[in-house]
Image (tube, rainbow, N blue to C red):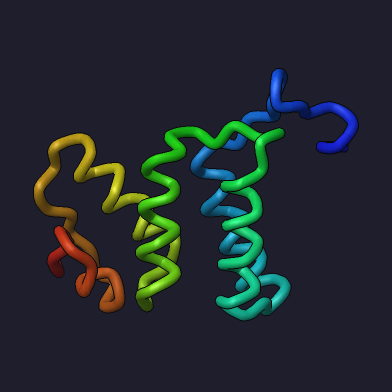
Length: 105
């Protein structure tokens, strides 16, 4: 479908929430490894036939996810919050508190 309907001139749109859902489904439902998920995300982010919502935040979150232990959704949330001038994101997630700008509730 993407190859037939999405072009560089008329790209398909991928919402940030869809990226989070994709990662969650690949991990939880299909049991893919983090390395495989990272490869899928990178391909999506690089595909010129797709327009990713707030692509800069998505790339920043991708790099954080790739290098750390926090899940992609937390990485994206923290990145989005920082871009919105939120200095601190509070969480219960022990992996997320290791990210820059996060602290435990």
